[in-house]
Amino acid sequence: MRPRPDTPPSESRSPAWALALLAVLGVVHLAAAWSIVRQPFGAPPAEAPLRFLFNDGTHRMGPGADFMALYGAGAAARAGQDVYGRIPDDAGVPYAFPYRYSPVVASSLGAALSMLSPRAAFVLWCALLELLLLACLRVWWRYTAGGLQWFGACALLLSTPFLLELQMGQFTFAATACAFIALLLAWERPLVAPLALAAGAFLKTFPLVAVPALLRRRPEPFVVFSAFTLLLGADAAQRPDAWRTFLQLNFGATHLAPTSDAGNYGALHAAAQWGRALEALPFGPAEVDAAAWWLRIGALALACAVVLRVRKRPHGTETAGAALLLGHFVSYAHVWEHHYAGVLLAGLLVTRAAHGLRRPVVTGVAVVCVLLMTAPTPFWLWDTAHDPRVWDPAARWTP
Image (cartoon, rainbow, N blue to C red):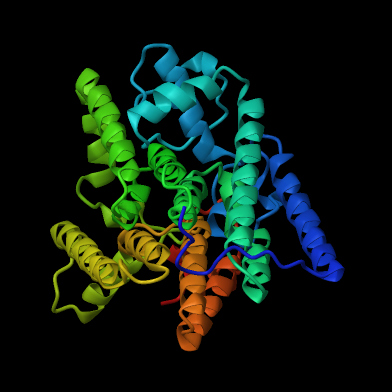
């Protein structure tokens, strides 16, 4: 196997004090994670560990409301019912947001998890998220060196949006972590890399945007993604109605106004607000849907331009993959606070590539962006009331 053309794995030994510091950060992270996992279902929001820091940690039911959507859909699949319909009464689900992931996730992962009690399944999912975080840290440590090693490790361990992922039982970090690992392993593990990316796309479809970054001259990615497509196609042929519902929920018309709140404002919401503020520009539902598609097309075009520019250069794989992932997050109709846990991973890829190419300005900007992604969103600066009875505190904020 020929050597990797970009930064080789580091073999340097770290000083004892640095390893001790990393161990302390690990203990702090685990303590924070345990404070979330140990909460009983239906714990009062006023007592949640992430209260005041995030909208979804203060104004949403929890813990595990997003995870319970998968659990309930899995129970419905086992009972032979519609996974997008009503959760079976005997599933024991305390609460859940509506299920909107793919039918195959519900009938496989969801069905398997629903064999456990809701509590045991939630704890198991949180443990899997922690293992994925550890895997990201391990791969990052192997393929970086010096101060960049420590910067990435500290960012991963101190990520507050990751803690929100635990609180909600979300899947964004897990899906992005698979893409992160795939992009760093692409050169030395040509089979493992596409398998990891396919695993992320199994949980959520958006990691598929990073496929072009892996499609080099080797046959493994083509074989893996062809098999992945055939499997999904076979499942869709067996239950077209379920897949039609999935596509409508995730790729149908963008109903921004009824679903926007202080926890998911993104670029599309900002564009809508500016359009209404100018008054001369109509911004009804049709205009919002059109703007959503133009935003996606623009982000995709910009990301593709990056892919074409860097695909044959050193660090081209992670640069292209990061651009495609960031294009997805920026152009998505709603940018939830927990998405920052995935954006952080894409930011680390940009930081590594810029550092390897000796671009100090780009490296500095990427470092600042990663640091911002580890911190809570500015929500805590504006939501001074911290009233968990309010669904959307932004309605009371002064423009």
